[in-house]
Structure formats: structure tokens, C-alpha cells
Length: 392
Image (cartoon, rainbow, N blue to C red; front, side, top):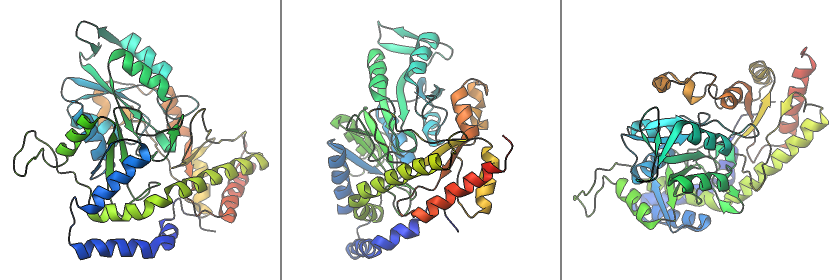
């Protein structure tokens, strides 16, 4: 039985006519850049997240870049984030000429550990109250912001993160690129910090037909700055008050996303139901001594953008599942502090043990809404067969 990691064709089959009608309307209008579709999507996402400002941009990476640029991150600054995440999280910091500084993730989840964040500040930083700056002692850079990642579809422990940021006057940017629709204490992912960032890459829970992203914020001044930055800093036309970027969400992408948005909660609910069924199946197969299933942590809803287990003999298990026709993925096989391009930061492999363990142990299984009971049982049965024949 073939089970892909993600089956976008199954999703498309259910909304094909709606998608084609929406795309045809854009072609009939011949308005492809920053038109009615982008404006409509921005209003709908803002309403869903309970914020006044939503700005469509060209990708999730650009959303992160423009959000940090809007709060003034640049050379001489540092931004604190986690080493276990997609590359763009730290890549945008470096591309702005700032210093990525890492704090390890939680042992029980995949988000920044607030206790480790506090320990990092106390040990490696100096707060200069006279000027209201937190300075990274070894580099001399000013810590400008926390870039908090909501990985795999579950929010971080935001009350603690926001409290620490407030104590030291740090901005908080939420990398919610994998978490649209997730909540923490009934507050939407992306709407708790100064700015939040979404990705509409096709594989996301709300995915387009190509790249796309969005920045949301309750701060209208910051929202206006992001809006200015996405169009070369131009306002009015051909007059540039700042140097910006060309980062506009396409009308065609917005049209596709507006068709999909009303289905988002339904699809996320199906993902949660699949996760619940996985948990029961793993327990029934007596696999919980070999496989650690993802936990839904306190006060957090989980949209299961990915269903990521921790397991023994991860690489061998992945090879076995591939032979059974089952798609999997390793997100991420090397933490950012181990990447060649970040060697200049001076970290060692042992500096972030929780991230290193996650890189060695995690494996993503299919979790898409259209996954059938038969497919899910085949996956669990194949995992059980693998461990039944191992001497561990």
C-alpha cells in the first residue's frame, strides 16, 4: 500500500471546481498584483486572528525578513531564536546583517525553553538599564528581539516568553509559518507578539499553489511599515522614503488561498483526529516503549502541521517504511548551529543537547486530512513489524 507523506491531489479533488473558478476570475480581471484578492485575503486572515493588520508578502521567509526589518533589526543587533527549526528562521537574521543567537528547545516539545532563555540572559547578557538595552557580552551586539518558533503546529509557552521579553524591552516576532490556526490559551498563533508570520507554501495546512506569506500585527504603525517595505519603500508611486523590497503576494495565490481558508478548521480538525487515532493505535500495538508520540502541551491547541514521533533506530525505521511504500521525512537532520554557514557563530555540537537529540530521533509520519484508517493502520503495523524484528 502506497501512503505518501502528503497527498495534495486528494485535497485538490474536493475543491477543484472552486479553485478553477477563482483562478479564472483573476485571469478575467487581468489584475495580478495587489488587487482585490490580496486585499480580501488580508481582511479575512486579520479577522480570523483578531488583529487589525495583515500584509500579504511573497513567502514565509519574506514575512520573517520584513517583520524583523520593521522593528529595526540590522548590523550590530542580535536576535535570539532556536537552533531546531527550518533554516529561514535564522537565515533572515543573518541576511539583515544581525547575529543569530540560539537557545535550546524544551525537552517535552520543540519550542524555545523559557527556563533556558532566562539562564542564557543571566549568564551571557548584560542589561544596561540606563539605555534600556540588553547586550550580548561575547559579541557586544544589542539583543533586539526574540524570534519565537511555533514548530510543527503547536504554540510555544508564550506567557513566559512574553514576560521575559517585556522585562528586558525585547520585541517578539512569532514564526508561526507552521502554525496558522493553532492557539495558546485561546489566543491565535502569530497574534501574541509584536508581529506574527505565516507561510502559504503548498505543503502548509493553508497552502497556496506556490510561494506566499503574510505578516500580522496589532500595531498599526508596524503594519504600515511592513506594507511599505514590501513595495520598495514606495509611497506614493515612484517616491521612496525607505529602501524596501519587492515582496508582494500574487493575486492568483490569494485567490487560491481564499477558496481554501473556509476549510482550514475542518482540515485541522481532521489532522487532530488522525493524531488521536495514531495515539490509540500505537498504544494498542504496544509500541510506546519504542516510539514517543507528540504530546499536546498544556493550554495549547495543536494543528499537527506535522506528526513527528521520536523513535529508536530512526534511520533504519525510515528505510523500512520506505520499502513498505510509506512516505516519511526528517525535519531536521542537522540543527542550525551545526550548519556549515553558521560555523562562524562558534557553537559546538554539544551546546544544545535537546536540539541535537531531536535531530537524531525525530521522524514525520503522514497526517494529512484525507489519510484513511486503512493507511494509518498500515503505517502503525509496519512500525510494529520493524521493532518486532530488532534486538533492542
